[in-house]
Length: 587
Image 1 (tube, rainbow, N blue to C red):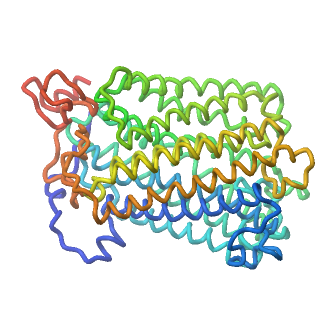
Image 2 (cartoon, rainbow, N blue to C red; image 1 turned 45 degrees about the vertical axis):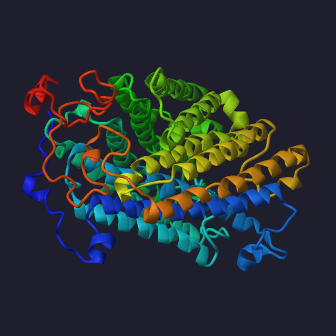
């Protein structure tokens, strides 16, 4: 039974005058907060990308100085070469920033904030001030982690997973200061995530419009709701582990120091017990956005809507019992390893169901290959490749060979770049009109897509070959190892492709900024979609809806025989529709 949204008088305050600072800086409007997360995440995405380019230069051209290396004199050896310690910091900070300050806020912070109230018919989040606090706390965490580059000893350099006992030693050069800021930053951004997740769950449960039953929610909202539950359960585990490791470094505790009775493997268990649900925190929202976009572009209802919902819930549940496949190299009991192998293979089933349902949605559809659809199809393709490579790591005998090689790097990036970022680009393009009232340029969008798709695959697919050839990850200078010399040309090819991939993001940046100021006016519903967000003006006003919307049907009524148009909005009442209370009781 759907609950009633806030009273009407609380939704009709779009004309309320506020100062620029109050409206756009310290805003409690969920839409402005979503855009704040968007801009913050893009800045960190740029920082993380620049770090990746420096790493790739070192791996592809280890005998050549970094271009413009003189701009970073304290991190360079004579001649402009990267110092090994700084390379370790780049690896650590690239992984951390991309996961916690780029992809996660883009998927959860941006679209969770922007879409949830609009898509469920609510005027705002349940706790607007808490929502504002979550953004500023996240930004504070980002500033803290970047400050590591400016403290004595440099930024954190123990790897983005910061395995103990290396990370537990305050005497290790490169850990003091920067590593502690890294840990504080993770705890602070964890607080922001917990506040946001609490807000999302409360909003979806309590503020749905009349008639918006659970099985009338768009799959994007189902995905964000399930993700919020994962965040609420998983993030405290990482925060607690970070605090324990911080105490090891600062006040002399020995949680993870084996020389004084600590358990370094406990850090791995805590990190990956958080870490594998985190994988689904980074992929479930993407699945939801892609589901919405594919249905819209195919002009068909989502194939197997209920099975898609149950698959989302199954993935979230099974994600808690597979963390051990990250630890096959730790000397795990073979019987326990077998259990983790089986659970890892089982979790592929609901993922395969979703892929099958996306294909079923597109099958014989009247497909429009607009830019969001191109990114969505790429997401499905890359997710399948990443999932297939993951099957190898599910088997302990195979994983023991592949685990510390570039095969893992390829798999990770096919899931998190090929998966999440393609979905993010598609979602930004799709909901850009509702954010800014303008359409992004489709020609620049297609140029960006094809360049990204081509150079992405040229960058990361050859890494599978590196891994099979035994090329180690976490390596600073492959030219020092004679057995890696045959792989040097492939490493150079990957680096050139990565540089071109980075450059391929320029059309997107240009498109994003130019469209903001000079883009074509979008109108209310440029995609002819059925969701509640498309019945309000673009950009959506403060308070969202002039009156509380009433929902009569699900979100994917495309090509309905009941109307002449090929879409049927959730709020359009037909003669055959019953009132929401009766419809809710029926469900």
